[in-house]
Image (cartoon, rainbow, N blue to C red; front, side):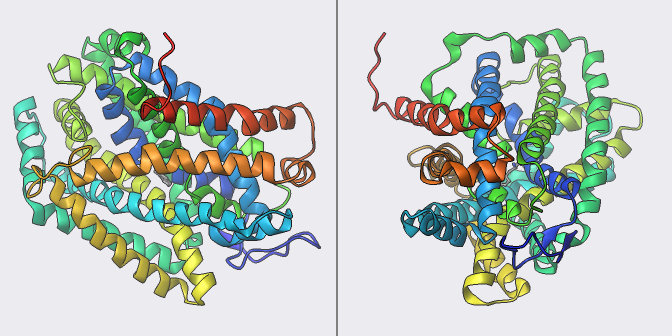
Length: 463
Ligand code: PHE
């Protein structure tokens, strides 16, 4: 998918090649955005944070903060055409400011490594459900049975570790070969197929008779359930699900052809991503209420509700197998992008081959992932700060590192880069450009900082 076509004269080209078309780029970023964040994470954090009001804040964050951050990341990436660390250093110096902006790139590389360490464990868990579904474990299963299967899986650290290893191995394999081969084809088929299966599940969840409850839970805002911590979680979720704030989109932007519209691409990705998350919620919550489950169940929510639904429908064994396969694929196209900034950095900085870089970084991430593997069993009672090792990694990366990266990236694009540079990348200085600039300079950074400071209690309550 990356071709080595020359860019316009006078413009930089990427060492790693370029996407063959606008569609290839949109598919790659959609592949990165659509993943466990939409189907595993969104419903369970929405559930833990009381539903409706959380969902509204999340949607507002996607529009007001997510869009300008994503556009900033793509434009920075395309202008620098290096790995995120080198790009930030290069552009910082080029704009006559400091090359120390590279530390934002470095924080992103680190965030990608930390996120993938647990993402891979959940990815492995998803993979294991492909096999469980295929052998018919969930056929006609009751809620108790499905819960027992889930508990049994997470209780065995060696099984969790095994699937984490397989998942990580697959990532290393693909990243080593170069993300271009296969990814485009995979995503082209994956996103529509996932959407179709989600619609099938939606049909089932409507038929449970609890669809209204699910709908009300998701869209009837009860602001009394919302505290600043939930607002921060909604904002963090917007970052996580759009893959922004850590340089993944920046790294992909580095391979974007000059003529492609950044605004158009970012809009397409955000719409696809949000649609899948909302659909996941509409599927999962009616099932929660139909089966008397707890919406605040936590990270295992998806692994209980969906097998239960599949177990009851005709052809369920087949559909469940296909569904968990698609979800594993979706997780995999996201995982690749979590590794890309680190791998591109090692390749460029230390002159390693992609294969060497992928193995090095991959092994490190695998080892870190063992902390999350044990968080669900052996070390489940080892709690500090926010909870288990997994809970802390999750909070640190999603609620702190990504928003912080987002503030710094928009400040860089809005304040450090001059108007000419950003207008050049965003296709002129028309009204949409002005809107982006307003959001990138003011709304996004101020909004993120405000929520952040409120959540850690550093801003006083005026009410
Ligand atoms: N957006 C991905 C998901 O929703 C996760 C991700 C986060 C990927 C950050 C890349 C960077 O599953």
